[in-house]
Length: 401
Image (cartoon, rainbow, N blue to C red; front, side):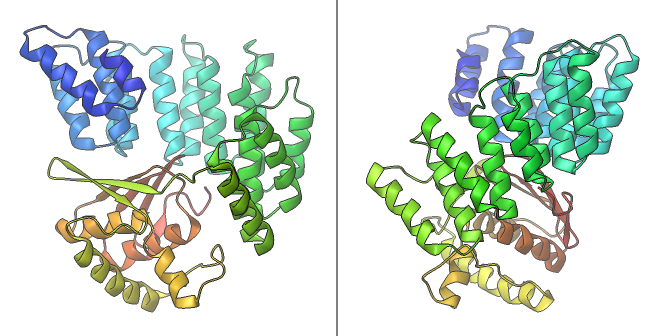
């Protein structure tokens, strides 16, 4: 039941059931702990990771071959990649899932070279990589722009290890090529796939078309996506954003009208930040938080500071409103509200940890770099795809994400 809740995103229910289990005097085993750790990884809160780690130590399960990889994965998903590596280095017995957790952790934090170094170390040992290992390696290459390396590892996956690529591997390869701007190569790769491209593959090429403003290919990918999953609002929004990046406002309006007719809803942007054992949730433009007035006033003052430091708002994705309204719209995105709340309620020197349900937009990414510069704070944002560590006016992704 705990694992069932964890796998379906019901973190509180999973934790409540675990607490009930303990109150009844039923001792957890390694499977129980892995289930709870899986739930906590979804929260992305370092304090919770330390709590379950402490419990594993007290129950003498911290060295368990299943518990330890789960802890490595959780620390990585909480932004504590160095803690994850320390735990990994301390392990005497490393299963394939242990290597996978650390390689994937490095990849999502944008440490592509470290991920590849770790994979090369793995190849020298007795543990053989599996399909998940190669998916993590190719994804790590994609997040760091290591295109040739990613192509190489995709080839040796089958040639050297006899592993057949699954749809996720094809999706990662399309993402690797597309993100690097090699859209024609990515489309050719799709055409030559031995299986029909699935949602992950087509979604990757559409996302790349949005980044690189390739409307023609974006439309082709979107048409196929809408055939496979006509009710997914995310891909409609991605197509609209692709049109917006090319200033094709009539087509943007057409997509929005089509969504309205079909009753397709856009997923609202949501950001979470933890403060004193409580999770605070912010939605774009929301004003229902008890500190809303204070947050918006602070954002306005912060806006003046970052503007003076050189920040220029990117309002290209917003049409049919006045310039000052455009700036207000982009400055009330959920991650900005969460960052402002975190800055207001923590002391100087404290790192701000944010979790967002969608990909960080380009304007918020740029603004957060300047916020880290003018406030002298480190801000860690975990979005839908990866981690961004903002510090002293720059981001760990190197503006490649």
